[in-house]
Length: 286
Ligand code: PAF
Image 1 (cartoon, helix red, strand yellow):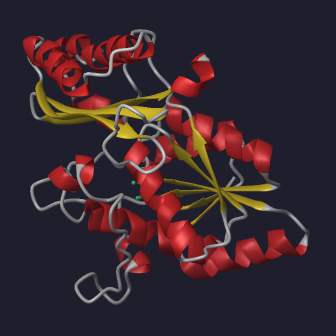
Image 2 (cartoon, rainbow, N blue to C red):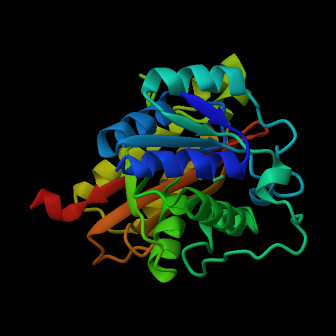
């Protein structure tokens, strides 16, 4: 695997690969890679002749009081993991390389509606930062395919909408969330948890599965159901940011008629904010 840090090197490497007729898959990341990211790279490996990963901690998507400065930068370990997973080319630019004209006056991509509420409500500007950097990465790499994790469900919805609305010629793949044996969704931010907090964290997935079972069994009093779920999470000592049931396709609040559903949760364990989600297809029950 080759690592490049400049746009010029990236473009040259891609030109060579394309000259040999290889299709390109992109896996954008912020590094600090875990098995969830590796699953994305392996999926990319199945999809294209050249697998490109990016590692870039994107300042545009962090709020003023968030963990931009403390976000783990683990490039050497990331390189080893990417190499073993079959990545061909790593793009690991500096902030100056990605935003050579600064961030203040930067053109931004903002995706209405699907960016609103949920994480977009708690993290104002976050999805504009994500959409902007992903749009830039798509323009730089021009991948045939790009692979993202379904763990960031709203992020994937935002990127899908951006690709649709801006006619970006890329096929998007959402890979299922990778979980620890106790159900905890793998996340770079799990590294912030103390041992005691790690024991508490799986409550999120337990509550999502309990709620999903109840919906499958016919419960349609969504507000009461979500209130019960919230109470269970808070009884375990976490602070719920949101727990919602949405239409999985539009991300609008689910109605009693919605068939493709997604339960989404964000909660604080101490100072660490974790997210998770669970999709349910009521049509597949019939
Ligand atoms: O999911 C992430 O790691 C980031 O939001 C992404 C898509 C790499 C954009 O910075």
